Length: 265
Ligand code: NAP
Ligand code: GCO
Image (cartoon, helix red, strand yellow):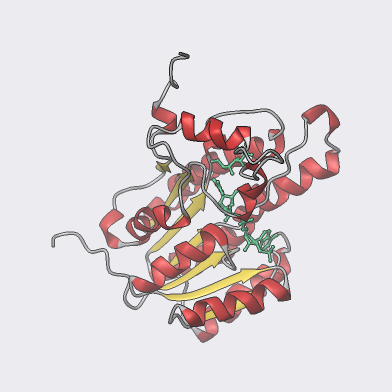
C-alpha cells in the first residue's frame, strides 16, 4: 500500500477517553500500533476504564486530570513525555454538553461548557506543541460536532464552543504547519454514547424518544452513529497517510450535513 496508516512507535494522548467516543478512538489508535495515554476526572471512571482497556488487550496509561486546569495538564504532559516519549498524536476529545434554553442558562453554566469544550483544547494543545515542534512532527485532532456548523434549541454554549473549536483547529493548522504539525477536526454526527443517552430514552408509552426519531429521519444512513464509526477517520488523521491534510474538519455524520431532510408525506 502506498499510504502509511501504521501508528507503530507513536505516542498518543486522548483526553476524556474513559468511555464513549474517546475510548473507541484510543482503542483504534492502539490497534494501529500507538501507545496510549488518556485522562478523565473521576476515580470511578478511571478504574472502570483501566479494566476496559485491559479487557481489550491494551496497555493504556491513565491520568486523573481535569483538562481545564492548566497546571495539572502541564504535569500530565510532562509525565507522559518523561515516561512514554514525546506525544506524537493528541486527540482533544473531552467534552460536555448542557441542554438548557439560552434565556434560562446561567452565565456560569455557559462558561463551564466553553471552558471544557474550547478553552481546554487550547490548554492541552499548548502543552504538547513544544514537544512536537522539537521532534519535527505532530498530529492534533479536535473533536468538533454538527454544532460546529449548525444550531439548535438549548445548546447555545455547546454550539459556541464547538464553532470556536473549528476555528481553533484552523488556526493551529495555520500557525504550526511549518513545523510539520497537522491539526484537523473530526465532526461526529449523532453518536450513541452516555452524552446523548437522554436523547434516546424510551418514552413511558414504550415509543422511541421524538429526538431519536428526528435524528434517524435527518440522517441519510437512517441510524445513530457508533463510537466505532469514528475509528477509521481518527487513524487516518493520526497517521502519515494524512500528512498534507491540515486545517480540515472531517464530518463523520452519515450524511446529515449533506441532506436537506425528508419531504413531508
Ligand atoms: P461522554 O460519553 O460524555 O464522554 C466524555 C468523556 O470526557 C468522559 O471520559 C469524561 O470522563 C471526560 N471528561 C469530561 N469532562 C472532562 C474534563 N473536564 N477533564 C477531563 N475529562 C473530561 O461524551 P462522548 O459522547 O463520548 O463525547 C466525546 C466528545 O465528542 C465530546 O467532545 C463531545 O462533545 C463530542 N461529540 C459527541 C457527539 C455524540 O453524539 N455523542 C457528537 C459530536 C461530538 P469524566 O466524566 O470522568 O471526566
Ligand atoms: C445535542 C447533541 C449534539 C451531539 C453532537 C452532534 O443535544 O444536539 O448532544 O450536540 O452530541 O455534538 O454532532
